[in-house]
Structures are given as C-alpha cells and as structure tokens.
Image 1 (spheres, rainbow, N blue to C red):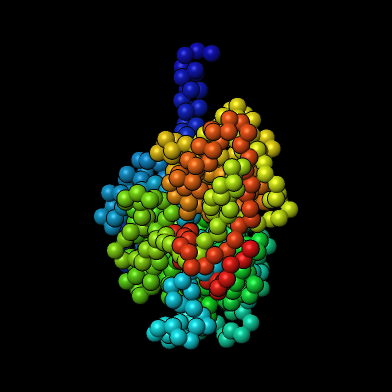
Image 2 (image 1 turned 180 degrees about the horizontal axis):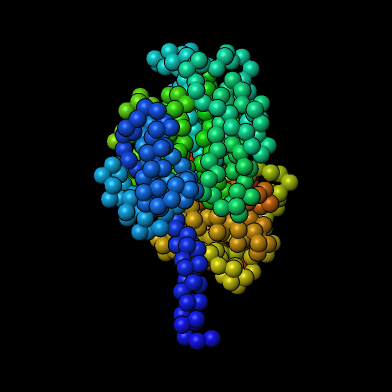
Length: 499
C-alpha cells in the first residue's frame, strides 16, 4: 500500500467515524425561550424544530435530537446537543438560557390536626376546611414519583363527575391501565424520555409508583379519610389529606436510580398548565435552583407549592426559596414516639424509635458495645458487635457527615455485622423517617448527645460488662415531635398513649 492509498484510507475512516464521535459527545440540554409567541402549540413546536434544523443542517437529525418540546405555558425544548451546538443556539435572539439537564432528588398522620385543621372538629376557627368545602373539585397536580392507585386514600366513592374544565389525560403503561384513573385520580402522565434503559427497567414504565414517595405526597395533600391507620401499631388514627375532597393529577418525573431530570420536570409543569390544574406540588430538591416554568404557571393563576427540604439545622439550607412560590419547610409537631432505654445500673433513659415489634424486642438485657461512629465495617468488626446492642456515638464525626447520611450507613453496617440493636446519637433526633431501614429485624433508637454520653459513661465504667434493654416505643400526643419530609404531613386523631 503506497502513502497516497494509506492517506485516503485514513481520511475515509475519519469521515465515517466523525458523526459517531459527535453523537457520543452530545448530551441533554434545556433551551428556555420565555413566553411563547404562538397560541397554537403545534406552531411553537415547529419553531423549535426550525431552530434545530438550522443548527444541524438536517430536519431528520433535528427531529431525532428533540426530547421534550415545551409549548403550552411557555416556550422551550430539551434536546441532545454537543457543546458547540448548544453555544450556537444560545446566540439566537429569542433564546433566554441554554444549560445542561440537571437532576434533582425527592425531598404521618397528625399534622393537620396539629395545625388546627381537624376534619371533624366543630369548634375550629374560623371553620377554614368547611368554608373551603374540604377542597371540593380543586385540581392538584403532583410532580413526583407517580402513584399507587389502589391505595384506599384514592377511592373515588361518593365523588361527582370530573370537572368539565379538565383537559388532561390518563396515560397508560406497565401495570397501569385506563381504570387506574377514576374520579379522584383524574389524570396521570409519565416522562421516560431521556431516561436510560437500565433505569427504566428498574421502574414501572407508567405512572405507577415504585418508591412510594409520590403516593405519600398525594395522600398528604388530598387523600380521603382512611380509618385505623398506623405504623405497626404506632400513631393509630385516621389518615387523610389536607384537602380530602380535591382531585389529583399525577405527573411521574422521578425514577428509582435516576432521580428527577429537570427536562422532565419542566415538561410536567408545561403539561399541567395545559391540563387545567389549580395547584402544583413539587416535593423536589432545588437547592436554590429556579425552575423557569413555575413563574409562567403562577402568572396563569396556578399556586405552586415546593418542599423546603430536610437539610439543617444550619443557616441557608432551605431549598426552593423563590418569591413567587409557597415553600413549606420542616417543623415540629406535638407527637413523639418515646422508647425506654434501661441500663444495667438501673438508670432509665429515653430515646425515640418506631419499633414496637414484640417478636423482635426481647424483654431481656443484652450486651452493650460502644463502637464509635459505626461508619466502617472494620470499626464494627473490632468492636465485635454480633448479637449485641450497639451505641454509635462520635460527635467529632458528626461535623463532617450530616445525620441523614450517617444514620442509613450505621443501620446497614450494624445489620450486616449481626447486631441485635442500634442506639444512634446525633445533634438532632429528627430522623424517624430513616428508622424503617432497620427492616423490623432489630430495634433502632435515636438519642441526642447528652443521652449518648450517659450511656457511653456507663459502658466505660463497667469495663466490658455493660448490658442494656430497649423497650417497645409508645405514641405520645402533646409532646413535641417532628414533621419530616420537609412539608405538611397526613393527619391522625390520636388522643392517647399507645403502649
């Protein structure tokens, strides 16, 4: 082969490989164009295609690149672009911003009573729920992980026809057919474009919820009354949403293993504006991030409610603090789940737990071991925690790892090491939403640093002969507890202590 032939062959190979290389370097970008210039959605989408065609030089390639077209409430699109293509589009005068797609994370039963919005309380002032007709025919859009439609919270018995103004749809899919919607769940959509096959295969390819977060949020907002709800006997009462007569429209944008792509969130906001929702709920972390579609929704009279997040307690950790939305932060509540911790020296201390499974909690004392922060397998192995109740307490480590990260790690590691119980110490005990990770196999108790220090002092004093007993948790109303999830939670009318 002469040099000319070799050169031509190399040039041909480069020509063949260049499109593949360019495609491999492309990623999802969000192009926001502000107010739409046409009332007809098809014309808005056509303008997006024309712009992309001018950049790609091919109409077919432009069509293949589009993932979402935002055309109802505002103008914009999400498309697979290279960096240079994104820079070219950013120079168009009608384009406001161009940025890569980002991913966001998702942020019990007494809160509504605690707030004075008791569903059946005749003396409430000024009868707000009754005046609002319990949310009768208000349409709430929930942008989250989907919904489990069989839950009793979404039974439509006693509901009238779907409001005539509703323009949404019930999008079917895996294990979710047209009958999954009803007069309570009047709409459902799911957004799987741009999600990898690996993530999709771990989820329902439909509005059905595999995580439970979206179902929880929807029932928090508008779940109908369900009697006899509890967590393993704790918190027994009536569960309902704040507006039990409201209708629900579900927008599944968050995926197990795939978070919540911003491109999908914007598509859901755009569709919700078209569908006719009155309120939009987003329990999604924003970290100060601005979702541009929300301002357009508010301009149309739609109320936007965001979760404030569960971070802190340190300054500047409230998320989604935009001036045109309502941001609901975590708060305290008058309910707690005290758990008695009995030491071998007859001292009795109190922590918090959700564990009251008598088959798991033994009435006998067990060996107690102090294992520091419990953040590595080696530290637990050195402490020989198998068959024992473990105290995880190291204030210095708490400075570098937030409690909401540290507790799941401690639970997983102590469970794998064969421990029979966990006493976890942190500067905040507002961690009850993580305790179900103990999976019912052992009691897990949260205590503050003061209680932990007393347990550690006892362990040091008896030099290896320390024993401890953890009693079942109780439900106490009238003492301060916490509202988790960074937003208002379901209501329960428990007026007593449940042993």
